[in-house]
Image (cartoon, rainbow, N blue to C red; front, top):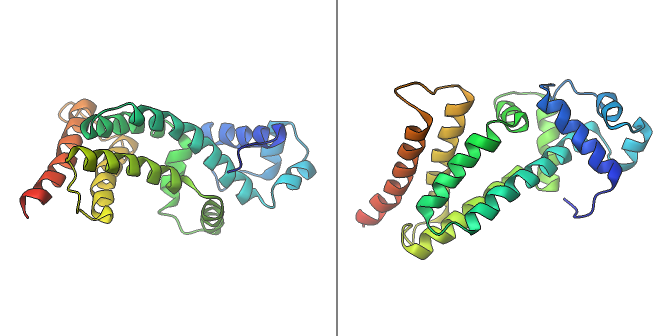
Length: 207
């Protein structure tokens, strides 16, 4: 995403995000819905974007970049992998699971539709949310290897799988409303944090 955005681009992006956060379905949003909310003419919108899919994809990327800036700042000032893992779990709880952009994107994963194909084509073209996730994982990996929690020789693919399994489990736990008295949030986060770290230490012990 380019660093400098025009006021009209920002207005269109914010309009997309507002519509999604108000529970408008990504599939059913029309260009006119976006431009009416932004107070910008439809013709003007097409001066900046070639399609609705490009507009929606870039808006979600823009929103994701703003959201992930918060966790990146926290991770850079957290001195241990254990603390960083809990910070990410807290971030998933307070930011990602509360964002309808995030939940709609998750649901798109399981749907076969042209809108999905077009959206993900745009995400790939403009460096979608996966770039932000990769940046977070890179910081965790560097911290873990620096402090010796993650084996230096462990392939990055394995490290990514361990971390993503834990983080995605918590996202699904929140998304599906799996919290109960027996399985409260804090206990679940501690369980996942412990098991992520255990996966790394078990790998080292097995050598």
